[in-house]
Length: 309
Ligand code: TXA
Ligand code: MG
Image 1 (cartoon, rainbow, N blue to C red):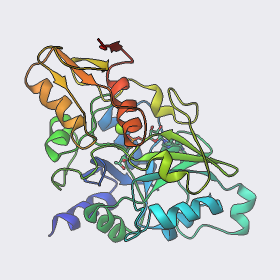
Image 2 (tube, rainbow, N blue to C red; image 1 turned 45 degrees about the horizontal axis):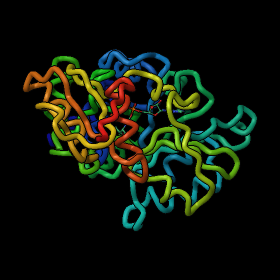
Image 3 (spheres, rainbow, N blue to C red; image 1 turned 30 degrees about the vertical axis):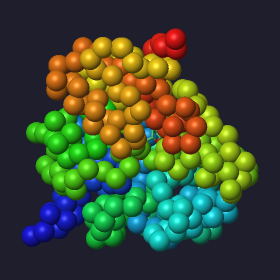
């Protein structure tokens, strides 16, 4: 039996499986099965009011979930969710659930995402991952997979199978090792307000890239719409201090010019070395730098020192 077959069997049985994606490792379960979703929250120790992203193989699969997909989102899907498109990248879109009346008029082909996934919100976050393991497993399952990052809640997101093992070994039946994640930072999360694109969590799909398709607004810092942005996040055991300006002369554990790909791995590495403090140089909060900035200030619990001379 191949490891994908094993994963599919476990997922059909309602178990959770750690699967690599292009952003970070995900802790996946059948998005239609409330009992399986409960296992995700239990394994991660995740707050019950922080909703999960539903992963689908393509736009067609998203269309079958009883959600209102605006035309603007269809255009974004064609560009960011489509393999081979020059703009292909990690984008999560938040959609409103269809009303009961609209559902009766056009029943979903696949099923309804239960309240447990979206924590009672009237919206559901959906994305198409770009990783052969995750895509193949979704296709073989035939149902969408709800998957948060496969770390214990609050710790840095896992970008290697070893990170998942360190956090969740003994709590889940299978981790698929796909090596290092290409992107190393979670997807950009957006929602729509008429023709406006609101960024709830910045990521590798930047405001600049999205602005080709409509007006973009960045809703950052304890976003009312994205419960996950309120929590302490990405924090290693060591104290993290975000440094604005020149990082020289700041002692042993300084991360200068942080990169998306390695940020979370470095935080874990310094913990293993027994660091008590980690200083991280803040990038300019623009483009992909905004996504990094967002993660660093959360890891630092918003402690920022100015190091300009
Ligand atoms: O790249 C990613 O997005 C990774 C991989 C595994 O796909 N997943 C991930 O999931 O980062 P998680 O659970 O760590 O973060 C999900 C974020 C949270 O900030 C959550 O609040 C937000 O998405 N979210 C989920 N559903 C939402 C909804 N219906 N409305 C607003 N925000 C939502
Ligand atoms: Mg997470």
